[in-house]
Amino acid sequence: MRIRPVLLAGALLLGAGATTVAARQIDKRFHESFDVAPGARLRLTHGDGQVTITPWDREVLDVSVRYSADETRLGWSSEVEFDVVFERNGDEIVVKERDRGGITIGFHSVRNHEYVYTIQAPPWVGLVLTGDDGDVRINGWRAAIELTSDDGDIVLSGIESPRTSLVIGDGELRAAGALGELSVRSDDGDATLEDCTIRSGRIRLDDGDLLLRRCSGDVEVRVDDGRVRIEAHGPGALDIGSQDGDVEVQLHAPGNAALTVQADDGSVDVELAAGVSAAFDVRVDDGRIELALPAARDVESSRHTATGVLGGGGGRIRIRVEDGNVSLREAR
Image (cartoon, rainbow, N blue to C red; front, side, top):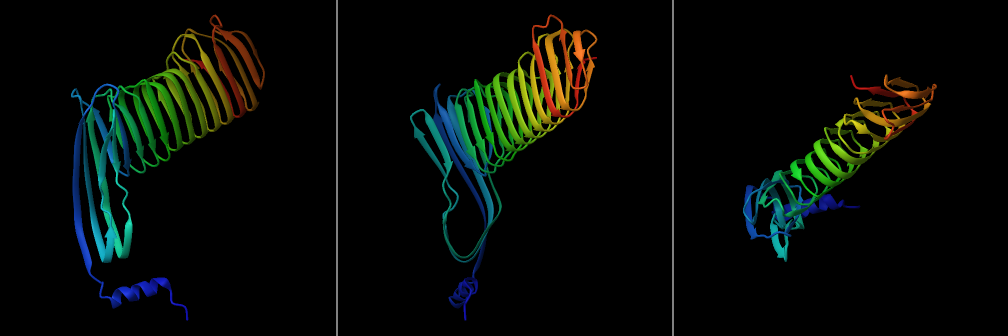
């Protein structure tokens, strides 16, 4: 007769009298401060912890961590409890969660598991953050930001960074400010960027909606499955690719327009401010084209194509759609 391992383990525990149940509340606090100078960088690995980073005018990087949990143990167990490691390597400050492992004989449960990182530093300290499942909030930063998150929401406000690089697995992004050279890669989550100045940007969403509102700059957008909305975009070139979802664009800056849209399956709606200058070229494979451009000249249109000139024709608008309708109109 075969004895199942689970039953055998239970019998051994009962036979040894190891049936004691222990419960406790854990509340731990960690704190370290480091003197820093221009060129300093924080490398933070925060696991599932929530992170808040705010600037101050002291040349000190201050890190506080609070960990809380409800723990229940049955039988013997040997666990490495939560800990945080602080290290300094030249100009780089390293803060990371110590690995929690060990062997448990019996039952071990941790409930209401939560930990929070609260960080204050001069805004010129560079940030390199890596997290698993925890939200991150950064306010008023001026140095480069590199962030990787598996499953957590990201909120960036009042940013004046020369470079912002974000890799997000499954979480939402909200950002505002001067993001400099921007790179966003998201697997499954919406992204909203408002009141942003972007020197050059590349945004890639596999599955999620994108909203750019009152932003400016040269931006390349690629969305596989989601809606793209660009509202009141200022000066700058837009290059948009969408596989499955509608695209809405408002170009509110007069002067030479630079817009390219390639959509596989979805409608495209483009609204142009008065004073926009561009030669436009629109083509659809399966759909219709609607033009509402009273000031356009040299217009030639058919069911699947439309070309013409707005203003001096110094800019360019190019739209290609395989399956969907296109609307190109002047703002009212």
